[in-house]
Image (tube, rainbow over all chains, first blue to last red; front, top):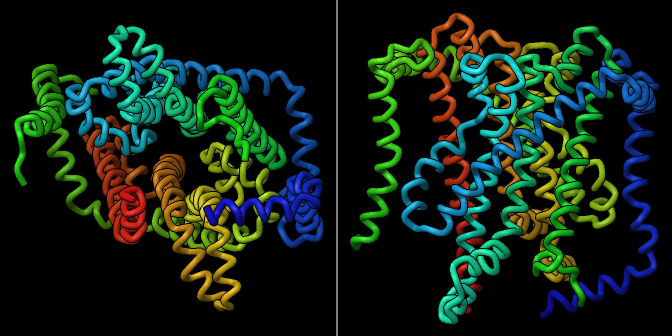
Length: 272
Length: 261
């Protein structure tokens, strides 16, 4: 009770600088960029290794028009999507089974606990050896890594279902199918959404890693090539691009989640 | 402790499936003599020979040193900066887009950059690991400080508690659960970065050793190295969880007490 009072006080007090708050993120970015530019231009950091932000953005704007960049982006994105889809196809049914049946849960718990913390990049040499240094290896390994977050979140979600709702449905003799579609899936869905969002980030990490370490076509290989050609601004521009890509995918998932799950208590906008 | 039948069945199931998987591999691989899937005892003897002998100091120690140095330096810096940025609401809002960007950046993309700027020596690897570990801890420290009950902070300030004590007794403990969530994320990222930086450019280390085994088709050695990395991953994770359980015992206790009411 005390907490909420003090928070409302803070809110009302700061009604006036609300406009200022909206500008703050822009100010933050601007200060960072200007400071970086100044530090490089004044020679505090060697320009050979640290191009000023203006040069990076210029390099990026040149890159976006090149077909080579489009091809790399398409390669990375298509591998990412295939990996995420593959991971979901396997993780969701296993997660549902583990969440719904205590027997399946006990049978698979220890195995998943042991397999999950294994860094999937450790499997890169095995993947190259067994599948080859190709796109399939990239997709399979990324799918393997993305499998775990979806599985874990689905199991959490299924085990977090309100038992009262479940027992109410049972005592009203609601059919199994309806229990699944009306109680189990809806209440597990925010967890599954979170799992998919984490899995998307993990899949992108592994796809880029494979491109960099093994040299498979994509953004990662482009970065390596830019480094070998000593094209420093392009190295930074491509890193900037991969950061923006990660950010865009993350935002996309957050928006889709908010759209699809607007009815769920954890997504409802707070009305004090 | 007494187990009932149900718990015994669960325990048996939990142990039976991994055991069955290992046995299945042993039975399946032994007669095949497949170059890619050597018999279990060959992998195990490679493991004992490689990783319980000279390679402990020659490869495991250099790898661990890089990982721990990067992880600790980055964590200390990130917690310190996060405590400062987290106390000011405006600083939190102003830095949000930058922190968001660096969080979304796939960390391995930074590998070519550190190779370019810092080269291939240990400093470059430590810097890379540190760079990647920095952001999850920073973000979670800021969120943790931001999530502390404002009443608590204001009370501490009103009673004239000195800044040092406020940081030590209000901010750090209040943000601790969130900081540990960040530490867990960054530790697993540290393992990833250690391994791939050793794949690409190194003269020793666990990653290097696995990569060399693959190149020279010492398949059993490669599998043994992968198993070691798995064990290292699990061990580091477990140690961090134990430290967390120790340091956050008061937190769990108070949460449990609150939920009982």
